[in-house]
Image 1 (tube, rainbow, N blue to C red):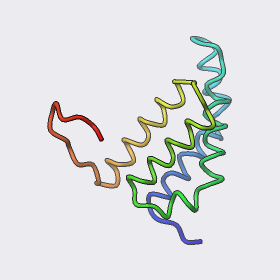
Image 2: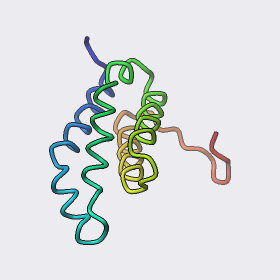
Image 3: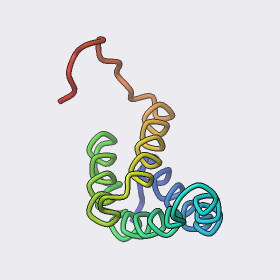
Image 4: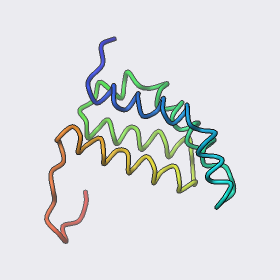
Length: 108
């Protein structure tokens, strides 16, 4: 299936996370419990398993789907969720689809 540009970006990020899982784990061992790479890899594999469905969605919904997938697979681990949230924000900026919301306005 031909994928969207944001689908290609999400897939590339997921593959890079998987490829560098050992490095993420080594970094986390120095400051934490050493499970960051494994958790990130598990989440990235779950995203890849759904990449066609995720890529078919408009970007905002695709990023929400990535987030939901990560929460379901990674669970309570905050590090991976924060890493992916940062990546999602970077992807939105790269795709030019970020609309700034006025200060003080609550998120939906």
